[in-house]
Length: 259
Image (cartoon, rainbow, N blue to C red):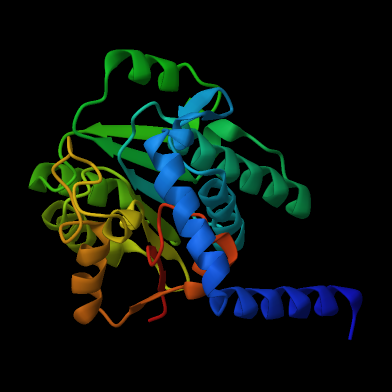
């Protein structure tokens, strides 16, 4: 066994142990419970843009983009644009590595890769900041509700011709809305790629944890995921990601397309 193989085997063994460690999972749950109340996930930037996410999920996203090597990432929910910039930075890195491996000239203006962000309200200051970002050439933005048919149609047109597609859902977190997004976009995900549904953690919190929001325990992204998976066996929850992260806003939300 090579050192690399031994390292990978030891990692898999750790993750299996984590999955059975009730104390460790309880501590992770408590951290999410308390840190979310303190808005801990609002503290971070990605390449100069605020990203409302836990560092653990940021790391998971970069691992998945590097592994899958998508030509298109579709994101519902834009906010300050940090997540769009994260995805775009990874796509730019893929372009660079591809150019190095093939000995070709890197021209970012001719990249076949693209991030498409959807938001019902792209505030002007956020739009300007995203458009002025050095990675803006890889980003397209669509304003409107992600479940309105004209928006769905526009995004499907932008997705046409892309061979490897990944989807991240992080907008309105009610059951109905997330289920609508899953029905609208999940089928665009290619085999071996991921549909990531964020904020499934809402279902693991006490009722009225977010008293000023329309979503709640029993009406959350996780209930939408469960409903969707009942009739879509082409997806499965990648529990290995949950076991690895422990601290995440998306438990049971990393959906791997297997067929």
